[in-house]
Image: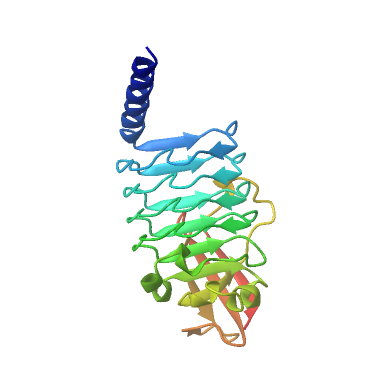
Length: 221
């Protein structure tokens, strides 16, 4: 009898997993505080993910192999990102990490070879394992951080491996995942209004977001 019950449980678990992996859009409700380990592992058809602003922990391998995701925003409520949580999300090109994250585990974003844009909303850099991202893509990624945070990230191991670190204005009222904007591009202009290749000295950074809005801020580097 026990063996039969155990088999039925395993079959039910597999059935649930198949159902989840057939979804293309997933919204984690605000009532959820933890996304368990392996929760959506291998859901290759998943293309849109919204994480509710009560989630504090994303477990190990939670979204491992979700190769259809192109953009991920981790809300400000999250404090911990588990081992290999988003590993092999091979189509993900942009990532936003909320301002409350204190733990980013090994392999969290490994084998995410399409990544070119990472935005960290924390004013101060936290410890980042070098293997959180694949070694070979660091030079190809731009890291966007809040205004005034450049030095913190540039002096912190692994964060300083990013090919470029840019400061952007982060609205102080952003408290939930829906309020976080994804950066499309940043251009720099000298005080005479001429576009320059990189931020040097005192200049103006004009950030364009994927929703078409722009923001200009004076920066010093």
